[in-house]
Image 1: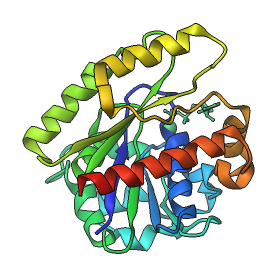
Image 2 (image 1 turned 180 degrees about the vertical axis):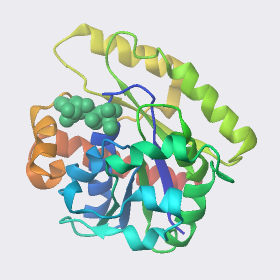
Image 3 (image 1 turned 180 degrees about the horizontal axis):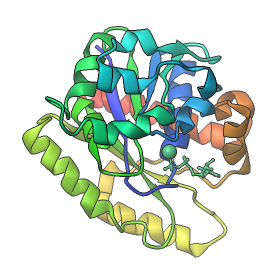
Image 4 (image 1 turned 135 degrees about the vertical axis):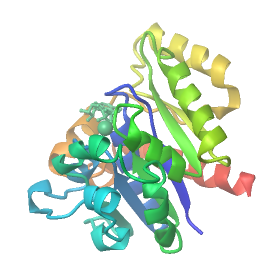
Amino acid sequence: MGKIIAIANQKGGVGKTTSAVNLSAGLASMNYSVLVVDTDPQGNATSGVGINKADMDQCIYNVLVEDLPAEKVCVPTQVQNLDIIPATIQLSGAEIELVPTISREIRLKKSLESLKEKYDYIIIDCPPSLGLLTLNALTSADTVLIPVQCEYYALEGLSQLLNTIRLVQKHLNKSLMIEGVLLTMLDARTNLGIQVIEEVKKYFQDKVYQSVIPRNIRLGEAPSHGQPIITYDPKSKGAEVYLELAKEVISNGERVR
Ligand code: ADP
Ligand code: MG
């Protein structure tokens, strides 16, 4: 059975999508079959793996709101072993349209059930809010990976996220665990980054990944070429560290089992 990992943080610009795309591609390069589920109406993960949103008639919206079977919307990417359920701007209506529907928080969970057999990893890229789309992701997930940007106020807002995770554990998904905390966009030239790492480690202790994602120009460029970093620039520091992260995710999973 595959493992479902939600990548969540209600702050925008912390590296959720970059991590969803590049962790997924890293796992796929190690011969695991991987599905990315884009649940952000911005659709950045979708375009980040080279899918043209304008060509899509159907997306995760149709699964969540219209009960279309999820396997009908899985599309292959140019990366071997990597598929995606895309998101288009149509999804922006879902947050409101789902409100009056029955079992609105468990719609994604139900639709991904049949796919857990097909994929080793299902990675859900969440939008920058704690609304219904993120709740659906957390309810479906086995674990949640939290990217934290190495900046001043890094921990700000995390208590809200942790609170939401606790509420989901209490009411919707008892077995949800924290997969890990990923430090992103480290600028190694400043002391601030080092201070933030220490602060986050004090708080989350061994939940913090050894792999710390550096600020890396190639990582920022790759999405505009519709490629994960391991195909865009396999020799870059960004590619190297996301591959290390993929190995950590794999070995943590083995430890738990
Ligand atoms: P989120 O999904 O949390 O909003 P993104 O992953 O989209 O965040 O990242 C925000 C912006 O920063 C994007 O333009 C992305 O390309 C860029 N970015 C993300 N991680 C890095 C990094 N490690 N180095 C350089 N640029 C990055
Ligand atoms: Mg994003």
